[in-house]
Picture 1 (cartoon, rainbow, N blue to C red):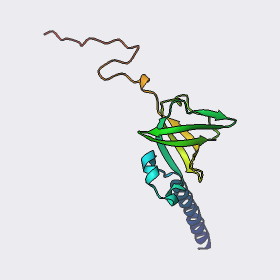
Picture 2 (picture 1 turned 90 degrees about the horizontal axis):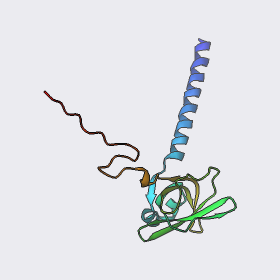
Picture 3 (picture 1 turned 135 degrees about the horizontal axis):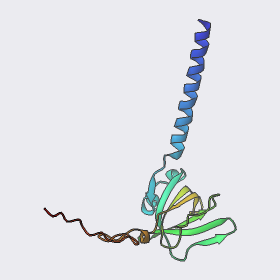
Picture 4 (picture 1 turned 180 degrees about the vertical axis):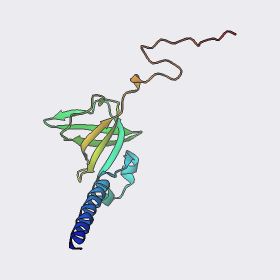
Length: 146
């Protein structure tokens, strides 16, 4: 009976540890995508949490200073200064006018400090409605004769 008690205790400890690890990771990764207007309406305490903010990269705002890339996100008439100092290189699609998501925290200086940047693929890769993608020839419909 002693072996069963020890085995049961070990199983409970392992399962408890797995549940604790899973819940800790879920809380850290559960961030919502906010727009700049939603961010501006949030109370100061909520801005201290990890957030994802989206917008369009303002034309001519990207500047590189040593290991930091600074740029502005814009949405309608609102702007947000973003400072990125992450280890990962910026996506190839990150450029003026691109839609981007910045993942990080709002600083006391009013600058959003991001550690991860995602950029949406440019619409130039998508076919216009009703047109075939570039490089593909339109195939005429097959007609059946009876």
